[in-house]
Length: 290
Image (cartoon, rainbow, N blue to C red; front, side, top):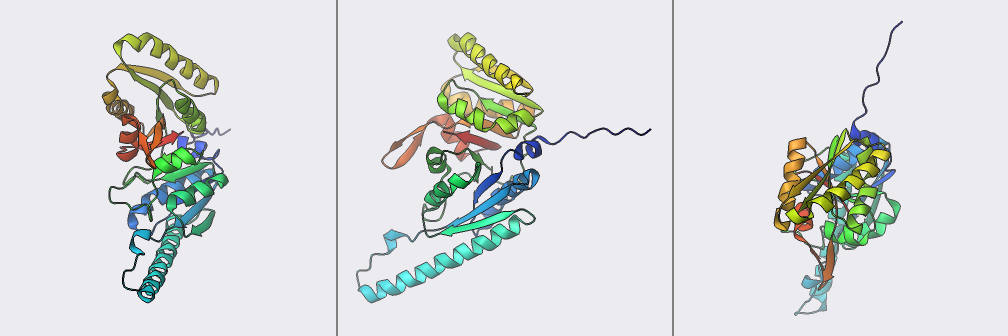
């Protein structure tokens, strides 16, 4: 009699089955291909629908014409035609990079942030890239705006990465509503991972209290079926992002789960140092929620 042994299911593949619909912003540039490919891998692993959104807005700053309405009308027509070409190119790139996946295409003449937020009602998870320094809000989506307004978890794909393994995951623990929300949203990844490290960075005087909190979180995750350990590190606030990366690197973790903390000021989201650093300069995948 022959015997067979089940092969372990990769964590990201098992977790992806819990996300039925993914959403990704598609752009014509090659720099957008990695996030679309990462989203496509997750969708393929989970037999999920992947919705691509192509969106671009006419830049109002260049629509003022001091020489007359005829020139302005011609310029507006040409600019709109260019936007239409960009969106068609984004759709072609999306269909190429998401080949073999169930897909749906949506497009809009709108700010990409707004288009993604509107479409998020149809999705479980939004896949984005870190913000670019030279990005224009008329063409590129800001993950800060989307995570704060969409009500959905956002997965940030680091530059050059194309596939999430999520075999080992770091949870950036802080006793806040945002962190608890992020843990709940990341639960499929946490349960499927080979190891979850609940990590907290705090002052010396807070170690006992924070260790108790991290233990509570670990116990809750274990009851859900996750394999968990805790790591409490002493350090100042400005060292948190570096310590999280250090723990993740030591554990060979390619995913950090964290809450997004921020407030609006002058129509711009202002984040705390850890959130800002990890969203703008991620060395690994970041799953964040607000």
